[in-house]
Image (cartoon, rainbow, N blue to C red):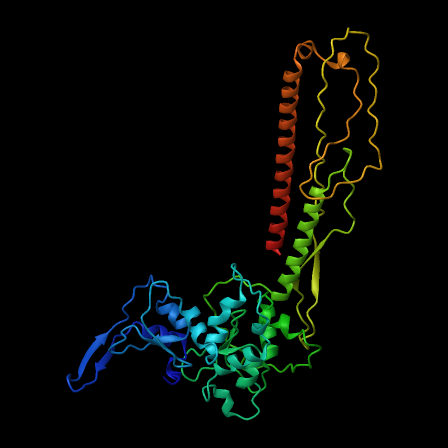
Length: 424
């Protein structure tokens, strides 16, 4: 099926599913001509409903044998026999990515985003500045659909629009509205002196969000200066109802690397076991930095976008694990005058630090005063087995409480770091 310019606008495609279509069965040797009125047969609960199919580029085009047949306005691909879980975006992209510009730039967006809707561009062949993606955007302007291609040397011709990351999304016949699918910016009312890249950058910056396209646009090298001509008519902004959380591919990757370093450093601090209980060393005066966002580029030239560093508060050191008391077997000694307590000697300062994962160790045993001087009357009545059981129970409870406190602190810090990152 050839391209259908009349179905280029999204609203026209949506309306096609609300209308009754007349289909015919052509005669053969055994049958005569028959006709029937057909409506879209599937409920709105299907993934392939009027809105999703229209957004994926399809309009309702039934036939006698295929009552739920749809066709793409750009490549003419016809599909039918829809099931409840069929995804029109995935199917269109899978079947037509080699020939259909709309399938590549719109239906393939899912390939560029993570589960939260942030652009990641894992597949480098799909970054916005890639030539193949630019050619796919150019296809959305059709052979002779874009009105400004008729005028020579027009500053907003279809090629420059595709280079500026716009696709053609007319609202009606002859309309010149274009849209960036990465930041949802829509502009129309183009004049001959307008520069699409300059207008895209200016409007995206004014909205407060940096379009992911410009994160890649500035990478190859210093770009040439762009003209500063302004439209005498201005631009008519087209609001979009689609709400998505957008990220910045390059910026987000840096952010994740920094966060991973912070988390890795925190895990290493928790795994380090020191030979003697003492306060943890002070945190380095230079805390790790999480880079977020891009500065607003200069309006006269799309210079490379620098990053603004934002520091996070230092991560609190983990609480040292208290040494487990070593049980002492009570001895039947006479109670004598209690001498002043003997201070515990420091462990050997040269004791090596254990840094391996999942290592069990015995802390140094402090020097204790004679058992007869520190035991109560009740403790002196305990047998060796009762004493050992009692000490094990006390040690277990203490270690369990310390471990739970460590876990609680770690979760609080992780939640705080994640909250700060989300706010940025």
